[in-house]
Length: 165
Image (cartoon, rainbow, N blue to C red; front, side, top):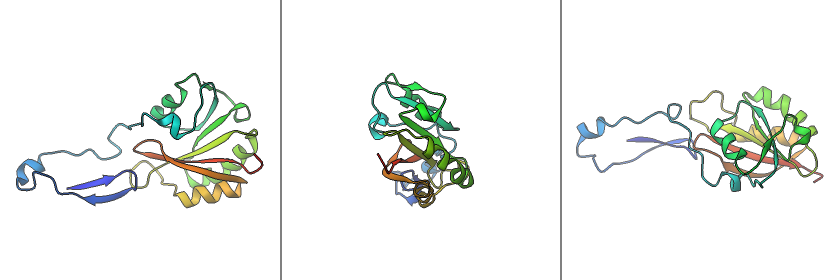
């Protein structure tokens, strides 16, 4: 059976217990990654290094399950990145990332963190922005990457902060 490994984005082959019964294994339907509802880990706040009471700014069309996990714990959504302790950014394309990241980096206040969140390769959710492009755009914007984390079975993110913090 072919199975997608969502952490690496690679397909792998597995042998199931029913390999001797091809009729039974053929009847099992496996949902494609785009068809499955996203699963957010229970430890999402610790993966993002969130603290209760932080102000969060959302930029881009984000995963609603991830956003709900972030807002839990008394965190407030704010309307401008300048007033946020944490900025979550979902770029739609590489061109958008290159254009918006410097603006968001300039707006970061001292001590604030910026997460760039992208779809994992091979999940069928729009354009894939590879990690090398995210890291290069962050460094070009004057940011330092400090952490990478899988935020759901469909998305991963890089945390950036200003060099002068």
